[in-house]
Image 1 (tube, rainbow, N blue to C red):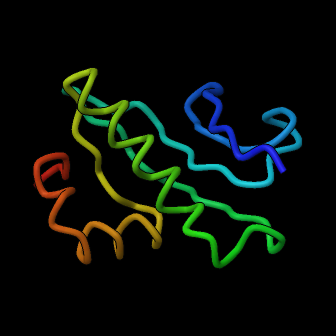
Image 2: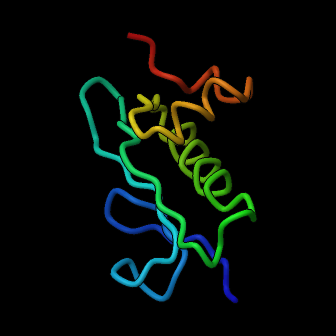
Length: 94
């Protein structure tokens, strides 16, 4: 199976197309160089393979390269930001 991460409109995904994504992380552009990570989905067939973390790492890389910070709203991203110190520099502080 091809696990290439592709960029869509306000999302990164794995799958044939954005509409047929087997996994995705979505964000909404906000104010002041903030993006809101608001949805993560991984199909049952891909669970247990750290796919959500791979997608989040891709989003974090994108944010860093564009001088953005991430406001975690999606429950997965909230938990990941609490768990991994490597995201501290990218997390939006309220």
